[in-house]
Length: 358
Image (cartoon, rainbow, N blue to C red; front, top):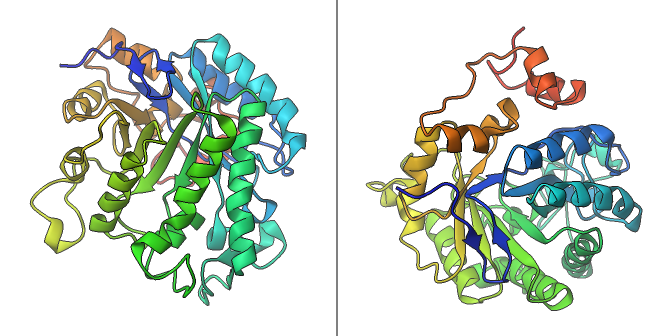
């Protein structure tokens, strides 16, 4: 059994005080121009105070056209830096690593929110998205890199590149969505090229001591499990990232693809040679027992989402009691307010079936 209080040492030299990371959770609490709100500040800093070893921001869009939801925290302009500095200073005062998630929704950007046609690697009739030109792909890559630099300037100790959940980098990875015939389409090497170029750029600009991770989906969203595993191994082999964050939805479910059944998703990804790169997973980790079960499968630290919404101090509760179970659902609005959610966030959570009392 792993000690939940074990320090995690990353290849970049930074250390995380325990095995708990706050998931990058959509919360709709910031200002529409991407500037940090007091509500989002409270939500995130309460989790740092609640003993998360790493506190990650929500998905922060690197271009205005990449906004994925109302009230999204932005990192696409220097006007965001002042608020983010206030946030990172407070997170770090609680001995929690402050990390920004860099995001672009691509074809999942609602047209009514961004005020123009969404973009995608290739034309997509279903979402009325247009294909990026080659110059726009390169600008997208450069804006991810600039956002990494901006994160560092704002006091973040690291950044996670969001390549999961059907957002734009995941769209590039998908052979179903990405039908380009240039150097960013076709083979898996080409479809993943933009991710590797972003990593190269951020590492070059931010230095070897900047914590750098990548979030990927194991399946769904046009992602094939075998290709996801191949990309993971290539990312590890670059020796330029510090951690991989695998979003599994349910860590112990079997894959969708018949050819990969017989092992659960967690087993598929823990058989990869991670070398010095650390592995974290998200997916139905909601109790102390779940935490231990996942960590016993060669996972270095856990990424906590739903349980962190219910309890800002979930890590402390689990470290104090390995059998801890969160409050039962549905939960009252007053409980969520007490746990640092704003009325907007509570309203958003109301869309999750059975989560909030009527």
